[in-house]
Image (cartoon, rainbow, N blue to C red; front, side, top):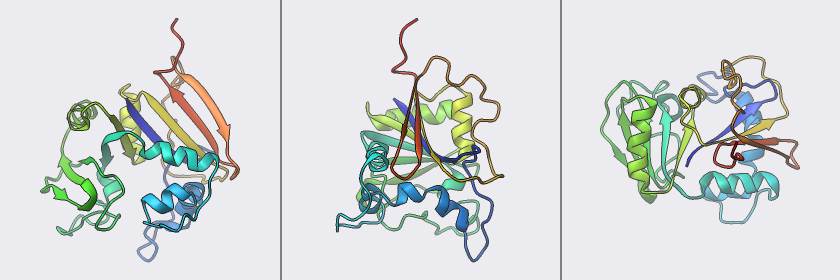
Length: 218
């Protein structure tokens, strides 16, 4: 299965625009992903928090699904941080010495770089490829497990436009951003052929899933 999990605002934006050199993520990014980063699963998997702290409930259930049964990841150069750190040959991503992926991660870029092996089983492989070509490589690496298209928004949109995503989960945060990259532009009728479910979490985040594998036969 090819999966996407993405945080978006009520007005459909999956990116923020208030970054500064002093605050490279911006304040809006924290607002957009607040429910996810508060979960017990995020704190344990990404921050290495072993205290058991963090929220449970609906948001945490989706955070657990985010990491479950993934055999390979695909992400864009921006998500890895290449746009902000293009001149740094030693840049190794945002996630420290042991990234939370624990699988091969294919980074789409027009600039060749050597692969980077990290602690915990993550290897970043930098490739120039179309969505279909990248997916073929990721499927081989996943060895029968799921492939997750992690982001950013433009990369996800390219895979959705190409019809390569089996399950799209969006966590809709109860905030308005007003600008950025909108997930839904030019994706009219995306829900056709999908089983669509929605669930509201304690945080007010609405989790909507479009699942082509669970759609009833016509």
